[in-house]
Length: 80
Picture 1: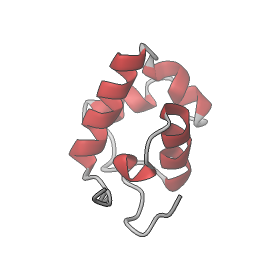
Picture 2 (picture 1 turned 90 degrees about the vertical axis):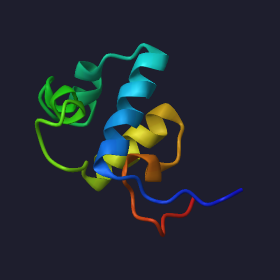
Picture 3 (picture 1 turned 30 degrees about the vertical axis):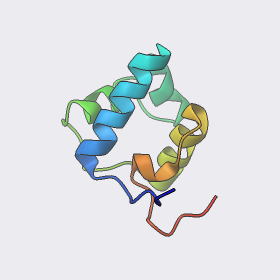
Picture 4 (picture 1 turned 180 degrees about the horizontal axis):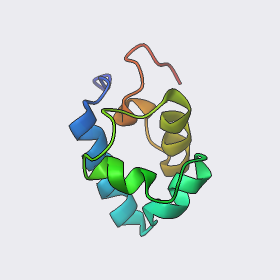
């Protein structure tokens, strides 16, 4: 299997949007789970804030959705 390369901010937005829709998990509770205001991830997905997620946010979302953290922008040298 080809290693996953860290995603770009636009890819992270699309991944988060897709996973939330697929699992029917609203972004507001996820935002609060990472210690942010309710609109934090919604604004990120719409491109209204920042160009990436912090490492702890990447790790939390990857664990929550059970995917590789690099899909949320984690460094390429990340190892499971």
